[in-house]
Image (cartoon, rainbow over all chains, first blue to last red; front, side):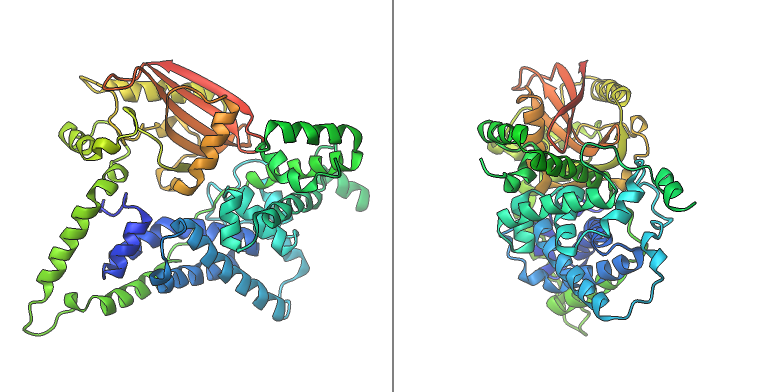
Length: 198
Length: 272
């Protein structure tokens, strides 16, 4: 194991800027999963997420000399990643829809051994894709990545109050997309389909 | 009070101060619209919290690594072979200087995550921590993200195994500062060592949540884990409780709190 494994992010940035490529490799290894996860949840499908995450890691490397260390490295990295995700979302809006409509609930990638191990997580991933973009980004950062609201405010360059409002509205939108009614248990999809599809 | 919508995010997280929370509760008793909104928001938060981080596709970072090598070579021409000119020496000394200056900061983070490390190395690390030493027992420096679901039985088993791991080494005198208390993977379903990442930015929120759920528990918070407990997003705190100073801890407590609402989910204690 290299001596870089336990080295703080900030120090790795410093070493990379001093010419140590291995320090950047450690940063990439350390954070690629986090970057991929946030891209997957924001963009909603594994192919776009892999493209965006690759772009985000490249952007991270190219912008490292602009990391001033005022924020935590992960906050700065989320900011870089979210900008890339927003670019991908904008591009996706411009390009013609190539997917069939039933691809929206495409299964999670097969290599994903541990993700969504908890019952219902697969439905949640599909429902999340239906939540409006700004709200989705807010709940991905708050409830999936567990970032505190003040960190999310720095990532998105928004007032904390706006972040909280988006998180709240996003949570409601997600619950509705899951078919949850106030005071009820989640809708049993198989039962619902019996009613609508004789 | 008018509809307290802006406060609902904090309400669901359990981070409102008690008096504001009481005002919101009073409003909720009279307002069916807000009750419905809050129920949905709570369900949405719990649902989103069930999503875990999937493994990233192999080779995803290759382009970034190649770019890093290109940029590093540009920044550091000394290591690029230049015919007949020995320009490596300044680089070597600079690297050593960096290592020296950063040693104190890095040492705590460098310590391997298993007990039973060389004791001389341990005492050097303790000495390097010197006056900055915050506690006689190791202190959590980040939140470990584990893709595992705990139950009460797993909590009890983990506490027992932690105790065994802590006390197994001969002449045990307690873990040194910065030493991580190893949680045996056998006790954790679906836990894979490569599947764990640590995040320092999450620590304040997780610590506050554990403090709230367990009313500022005694002892030193030595590890914090974000996983699920009975399917619910949860923080697990490993506390070492003892007389402090140079005396070993006497109790180990493993406490689980819900990420949303910071409710007490479970606790297991082992005497060391």
